[in-house]
Image (cartoon, rainbow, N blue to C red; front, side, top):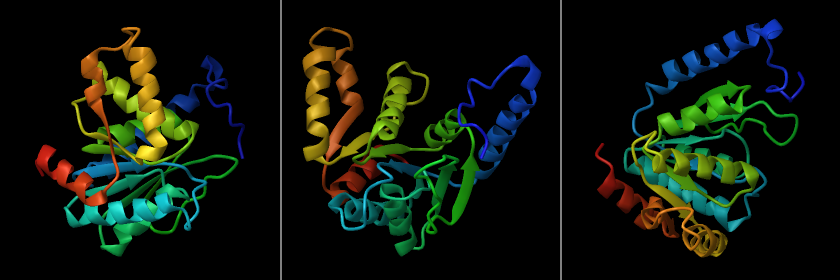
Length: 216
């Protein structure tokens, strides 16, 4: 596998990498433009099938498909696998945006549309550009990165506002309380910024909210 420090490798003498980046954008746009209204579901690749959030992600994805949404995930294991599996349970459109990593990330077999990316930033554009809603399940640094990327783009009006749901009050409440107690209290964000995200637990309630806010 090539070196993983791909940003450090960019230089004028390696301008061919720019063509690789452009090709990933072109392929992604051509492929994803056919997907239709979709919900991006993201979370930990390390979550096992026995975990309650694996089961919840599978159930939620199935509910999304029944409500005529496609499902987009990072294409790997854990929560991503569960969401693609849930979409497959209902014979729905299921996208896996896989990233090439030296550890952890291997494509799961349940997405019926698989894409492979070398560059994180291209992949994240696909997550956001073709999502009508963002659903964050429990996860680590990658999950937090994807969450705050979407929140920042909505806050700064770089993308149209769409629902950003954090699934699992026992997991996310501490983070949201910290945001209120530090960022909001210190006036580093506005009170209206807190409206961008919401914590929910029940798949049926989540899908009902999405149907109210999104016109298919």
